[in-house]
Length: 506
Ligand code: PLO
Image 1 (tube, helix red, strand yellow):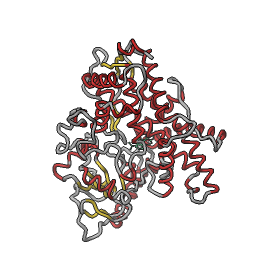
Image 2 (cartoon, protein in one colour):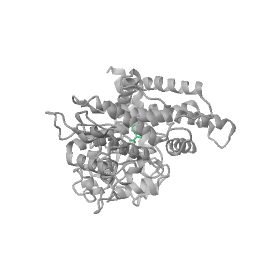
Image 3 (cartoon, helix red, strand yellow):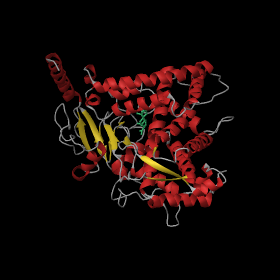
Image 4 (cartoon, protein in one colour):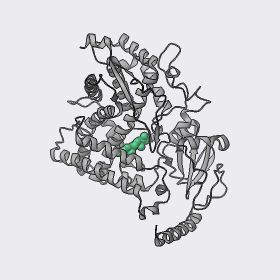
């Protein structure tokens, strides 16, 4: 780096240092949380240097700092929660007070400056976009396939595809992602991809590019002025976003050209219809239904639908490989309750207790976003009686909550039976320390979709197949890549068509 840049960094740092020390003084008289050691300008960064992923590092501070403590990231006051009691206070009881989102360089780029759903601050428009998605996903739609029909059709298709792949080990992640992309693609755009469609491969590429660069606790998100300096990470994010932009814009323009308000086929049409209605209905938030807003929501839903689903399906499949006895139990349940004459349906959920328990246990042991997305206090408030000034960022350590030894016996052990009653029924979580989709006003919009999809896919899959590690490729765990989500490493499986299924294929 040349001298001018270094001098610039030092000057800017001092300006910011003096500015932040004026602005971020905590009001006197409050009851403040125990804090990690913190220094001017860098905050607690020295204590945060570690090879551990952030959720494990923050959990490790629990011993000395308790379930609720604070730290400084640069000049940002951050509160960390490692216990469900405080998490519920923030997410549910005071959900509206803590419903803000942090303003960071990378999430601002991703969300077109805070638009859409996941990274937008709450507002009537944000609520409207959420409702639109919710009602499009879950409300019965006349003349159109239901969510259940879409998932069942795509699950049957991928399973027929798997039939061709039983001869040799299969790269499972890409195949699962293809199926999941088709479900969310149908919901968002009423379209699917062929397995080798170049556009699908481009989607995988940009998705990975975004996940690798967005909000990874990087310095760029701490010191936003760094964006004015050359940054490979920022360039990589911009490149991925440009690919996403070209794909989503194409879909959006096609929808606009063919739009008929009496035939709403997918989420994009539903949003275009709301945009059209807003022209005549002053109760609709017209200024927040511009093309830019719609594209942001589209990007969030398609992105979240694809990424989170592929992570959780991959983990569940991996646990089936690790525990053949769990696999057999689910298959026994399927054989007894569904048989082979028909495909599984959503109404079978009430009978397949072991599969439901396996889904819950996967969501517990491997939270997709171990630190959720940080919440921000919109006004001066409190958590557990401690003073929380407006603007505080709250990081909820879902990993610590789902692995709390006081709440879960041997939390690191995969054991679906913890979600079963004595009679073998899938019951409510045995501990309140379980919130895989968050809680309160910002709870995940895709919660019901995720549970439906996991159930229908694995019921369909296990009716037809068993899975094993390919010979000589036995694993005991997967590598994890922790970013905004925790991605599992790739692995191969050996599919085996079940004898019973082969005998009775409907
Ligand atoms: C995944 C990559 C996409 O291209 C963009 C995107 C949008 C929404 C994000 C999602 C990514 C990751 C998972 C997130 C989701 C919003 C809610 C979800 C963060 C970055 C979770 C698990 O909180």
